[in-house]
Length: 307
Image 1: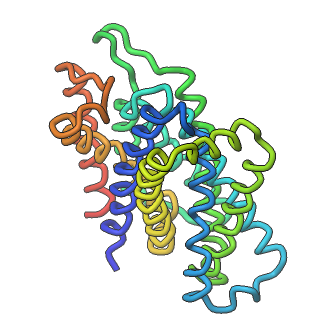
Image 2 (image 1 turned 45 degrees about the vertical axis):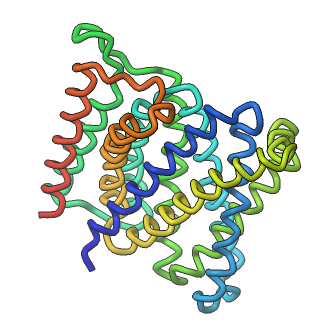
């Protein structure tokens, strides 16, 4: 199977989900905000559990160690989501998301140590080109002589990047042994458990979750957005995990670096059709040139990886 189209589909879906998340945070923060989104995301993920039971074989035949590791691995994805949401809550999506592309660096090291995966010189070169493109994207350009990286965003996204890299490597480590759907089952058990723990242990999150249900109209409106976002994000996660089985984890995460290109494309479309969704994004000539250069560099890097 061609691994690149599969790997590209994941960031295409996730980037669309990013804008829905951003819209939720901007429009309904006073009614739910981050706490509501995280808990809804964790609980919605439980729909994958019966699906995994249906398609998986020997789901309950795993060792206690394997099951425990995968449950913790599922918790890591929720932790990464928390960092990500706090990043896009205060920053332009176009500036926050690209820094996530440090994930391939972590994945390369972890993939080598845990799975013994190595990349050829051509693959390393292509990966570095893609990562270089995302570094260009992550720069905040006030002027051509004043370029800086937003420190708070960098720390938040780094906080999301390491758990994501660990999650991908651990998923492949387990799935190669016990199967794709069995691994999904135990990971999504962990996601659901962590969501329930957040609801029980964090009053701010619990209150924001409950606030969504204060009025019937508000509940229906917010839940429709959350449902759409979660369908996209869960589908992206399932596809990304499947791609891990087709290529080295680091390479899949490098291709996932195409996320900013999809974000950029959706931003252009949204600017023409729903400007309020992308409120605050700068479309000066310098920023357009910067982002267009990023896309061109990333396409060159991916071409080197695949061709």
